[in-house]
Picture (cartoon, rainbow, N blue to C red):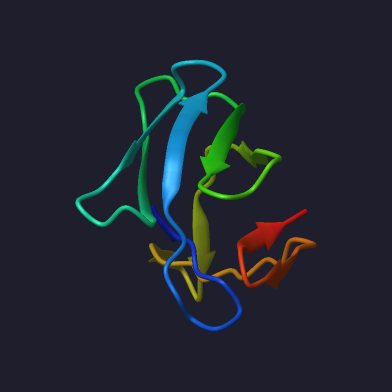
Length: 96
């Protein structure tokens, strides 16, 4: 899976660091500093993913779990989700 982080104006939001609670999933920042690649590892179990963003004081925490989805008996390999976090900006950047 790929996660991309943007602000409400569509400007990419840089990731400072990522970590997974256990080895069920692997997460790494791609060549784009606002994009995260998540891979399911062998024997994947549910885990927490912590993403720390530049200029945001609180980490974003996601629950990851292995899942297989089908639609009309065809495997679904892409899901698009959007979330919003409470924040606002001023002339100096993001505030929580």
